[in-house]
Picture 1 (spheres, rainbow, N blue to C red):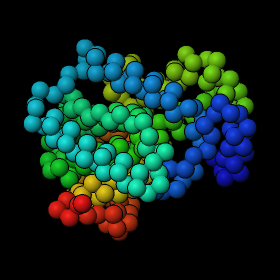
Picture 2 (cartoon, rainbow, N blue to C red):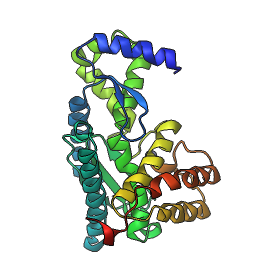
Picture 3 (cartoon, helix red, strand yellow):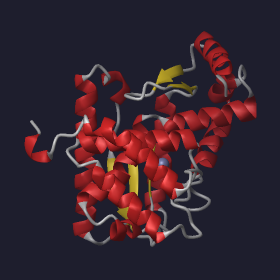
Length: 276
Ligand SMILES: [Zn+2]
């Protein structure tokens, strides 16, 4: 969507009190159109997350040591990001997140996050991301999707495509079932466990950039992200593309972008020993 289009949609959104409208992504400052109240998106996401966890096809990892690592790294990043945002005037944007980090049995090298802070890591990822810092690279990326409200944005784009601009308020309010269907379609959860449709390339690049910053804020060396992505590239892409590679350009391009974002992330990095 071009800038003029976005601006006029924002004006439409602003004129409808029900809608959330234009928001700004924390830290990157990018404008985004989030048409659905975040509370609605989160309650639907919570329901889907719980039904995923309770599904007979889902098996939580029995490896208590690895599960603890996922908890520890996820909590450390989320806590650090919340603290940073509260201290830097972004407390409104980090309100009401209920972070959960679960390790689920699957050979897939993958992880994903839902709105409101519901994160899943697959056991297949743990073999490749074999240090806290490398795991932090992936979890920082997933936490970034949640903090940047990419789920709401994607859902809003879905609403726009299927229902058009002005009808949106009525659609979300009067057709909750249809709106819910759009969320489910966005996540693909339910019909096929854990398969998530791709975010846009712009959102993926933003999650990479924010993920680097988030891991750095939490005291993980952002260079560990490069180590991880290089290993990932060396492994090559299988038939099943992981969420965090889904709409990305070729590995080499992604690695180059991460290198470009590195000096910004370094500015946020305080080694764990020096953290207050
Ligand atoms: Zn991603």
